[in-house]
Image (tube, rainbow, N blue to C red):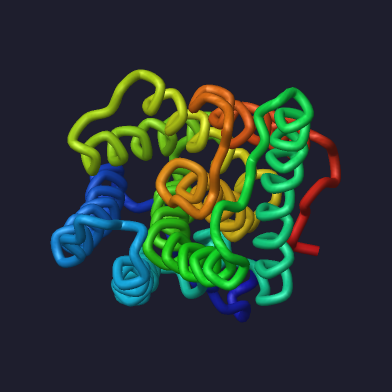
Length: 275
């Protein structure tokens, strides 16, 4: 560099102190937990499947997602960055493609597994009129997207992963954010059985890996909303009837799709969104 060449911001930037990693991560997760707990308290419905409950989840989800995005922007600016790319955003087209990729990559193996289970005598059937089914499906999709998928993924696979990446290698980032995700889920539920913990761990790992491979946090959002929408339809709502056991349902909803996603994400060239 000659004396006439200006010094850039990137050249002047030095890594932030280690203690700021803990503060930034704790701040973001703390805001998420507080917002989700407040939303649950305000909903206070004895029937989470009612139209009113779903509409309340959508409205509270808009507020939660907006709050998380505002917090994300503030923390990114405070750490010296200028754009959301550090948290796994690419371009509008790239992120939309990543969302669709994640949604489809989970949905196809899950649907195929339910098809096989139906052939073996455990069909998945619609148990409501068509209009009611589609109304509930649309309401539930947006409730999950806004109150769960977007805020949780922007926090864990977006910001937390970005902060951890300042100090850790990729696999350590995936492992630590998975542990934080599991701990937060257990805290929000007030405890969890070993099966739930293993499911949260599988979710955290696969979603973190998908985010790493594709370069977009919206891949994880797509997977998350597909998985949770289907799971809540099968286990909570009466418009869907599954004739098999809960264990079989979890194989179709969790084990097969997440294993398939991990394998798919390992294929070179799959899902790149930055080009």
